[in-house]
Length: 181
Length: 445
Image (tube, rainbow over the protein chains, first blue to last red):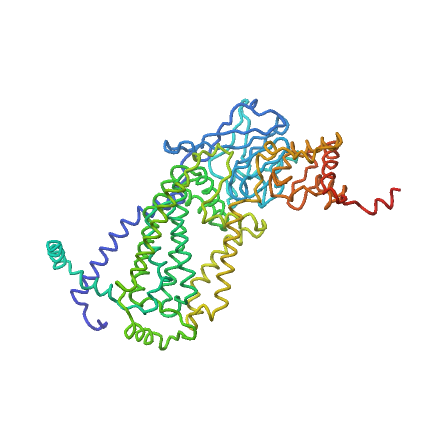
């Protein structure tokens, strides 16, 4: 069809048909794409980052590092045990705390605390950290991730809500380092 | 029998699929292409529906098929697009393997997801958003499982079926690669005419002349998968996906072990660039291959660099997989409490030295250092360490660490350090003197 020719009726209807199908396709695609991108596009649910309790301060004796768990602030009934998140609580001197994420700063494997040698060791690629969470050896580029904490009425609270990963410098996971103890 | 023929004809009068099917089956293939080397492509097709062992076989056969296509020069003109879709099929197959591993939703799946999240988080700027997309939320939970179910059952199989359809269509339209003859050069100008000549003059119908090998091999592969499943059983699921169970050493499935191993050997500063840029380069090279090597020799006998490339890749992947299966870099978490110090290292030692042995054990040194082949392999074995290091060097190494060893200065009292070094100094073969500092002898008479 040249530009001088009048568009044929068939051509117009073909175009119209294609347009209708394109609209139908888009209508179907929008909810699917919205589902796929919802973790990023929708606003965070209120309370997705919240202060959760780790229990009474007395559970964490001064000078020691203890295992603790908490329930993730946002939970669906189908989450089951995956929403119970572990962490390491270090009571530096009875007043100051450091709360470390369980995830190795290398690739997220669960680090284990060895009180005898005062080291955290990772079972995956051999990352090791000192008692204050700083990197001791192995592939991690940085120290352990830390939660912000506060003590309120004798109860230890941390600000939790997302899995810490090396690339994401999450607001709650960047805390001022206390002096090396 | 006659009735079955009549029923068949009744359907075909309406469907009219008989003629095109016969034409497809009887399409001529070069005589030498009806070879056993050409069975891998069709075998890949038959195993992808099976699980567990099927996924391992699938990946193995896809890789063999890829190597064979590469060595036979089958990616050259005019089959560039067939090769590129094949590369996409490799990616999609790896995607099936990774998402399948996640759907087992056991301990390894949980920490494997953490590993994946840690890798994608390193993408500049977009990292945190990509983590959320991957996990379907801020943590690994049921939304993650739904997401991977959608990927494994709908999205990736859809791509797989689409790509396989195109791949096969191209094989039919362009014809299967002829047997590579040394000296028969591919040129864009006259290849199609030569191939036409080869198939028309000397070709044999695909069915039954070539297809019987494909069918026999496919049957053999399917039987092997069943045999593996029957003899070795399923792999997984392991423990529950409970993050509070931290007494675990997460391990990926067989075909990702090489990556797991690579991640422990890269220097920390090189890790992010290698993880993010490496795959882009690898993919770019694979896709560009038929464009910069689209003509010329097909036979591997005249392509030494191609053969060396395959050997290099095979040795590299094989070695990394072997290391990934043994993880010598991982501390053995219970070596300190589970592996006693061999008796021969304790007999006839002084009280101080034996106390040093106790320090060695109690401070978890054995998690990374082996004695008599037991214990971790992250650090060097300590049998014979006294031959390598003098007393001063031992003290320095223990107190300051270094060379990938943590510093123990703050965790050992001076008395413990003295005892530990005294014990380490006894670790030398009977006939060999421990290392000593010659300058000391000169000063201390």
